[in-house]
Length: 271
Figure 1 (cartoon, helix red, strand yellow):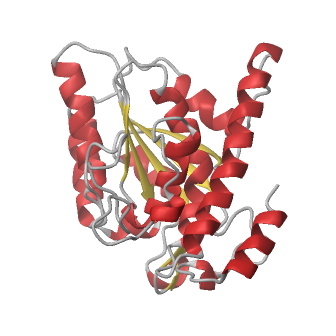
Figure 2 (cartoon, rainbow, N blue to C red):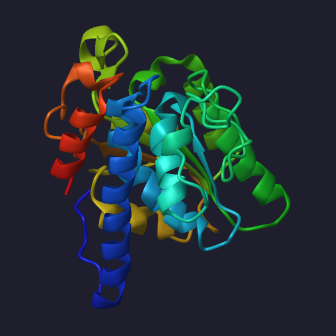
């Protein structure tokens, strides 16, 4: 889809979200500089999606965001912190034994309702949330954020089939399409041609967007879906390692452990 320019009154909001994205990326780099390192590339690619989705959550209408690609936990913790959901800075505590900021998120962390890690499982969590809101006659979306490599899991497509059959117009599946997965490019392992057409064939509405365009993302999440009868799939094209020029688009950014000096250099480059 083509991004539509927001009216002037929304520009301060977009400026705030953009500032959050910069701060969050720097926090993720800090987590990569921990003794344990983190899934840097996917955490950076998904950050703008998470920040826009959490902005929708802040409306207080019962919307829930589930990070199905749970290995990008560092990105989620950073996004929750800069969005005001998570009071403490998670970076110094990331990966510490006995702490809540583990390599995959769990409900001990404020803002995380469901534990995720096994790929594909967060998608039905979000669909179930959407169904529960509809049964209860309450507003709010169930937003699942998945990776394109994650779409190799059959549970994702089983959920899509159920969501369409149940007419879950308040279910939104966002695909962070950064083109990479643990073992290399998605296109070399299990290609996903005509992805938008696949979702449409399952009965979804489909939107394609730049996954780093905060104006487009917030517009998609803000839309009133109370009368929608088809779930929405958002195919968001992203860049692995987005914001850190040294690793942007590189498969080697998938999991990174760096020292403090390199972290400081990378953080200065984030704009």
